[in-house]
Image 1 (tube, helix red, strand yellow):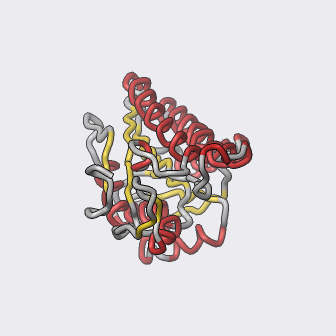
Image 2 (image 1 turned 90 degrees about the horizontal axis):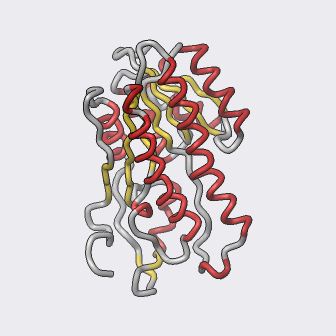
Length: 252
């Protein structure tokens, strides 16, 4: 058990934002279940925790598969007996594609992870938090700047992230009687494998391609620790953490 006695689950913990969040929670004294599809990547995340690596528990899981999600939560319940914090982070994107050329396969691939997977994991976490003693916990969904404003050619991703905002609000409301808080982190240009392409330019509102500033992904980890550490009577419903100079605020 970690030094603060709290149990957290991070999905998509094998790289990028998920890895940064898991390492930050481990450093803060949480015991952390690391979920993802690649066992080697999860093991690498655990090894990066240094002295806290013993409090990391890698579990391979596919968030799009109901049976796999059920097995994930059975393993958490068996090992820890409860769950205090979920960072519902696993996500996917598709190549920039004009809406008229988006295929059903592209749409399904993104929505299956970003929305259906987020539902399956949050739903299972909610049930565990509702039924455990003491009751309650905190669910943090990974939205995106795309939950506010789209990029060109991003219909599947943007639609899925707008849907996460509705899911967050619904869970926050339904969770009140059961001491379950739900908030959303909207991240803009955290340096990760998903944003590496930005150095070569990304579509702007005027149709041009330009590189965009990024921020250290560790900033996301620190923000997750803040949200996770709030007292039960407080909730950060929506938090935006973004590269200071990214072209989000203003006229594009």
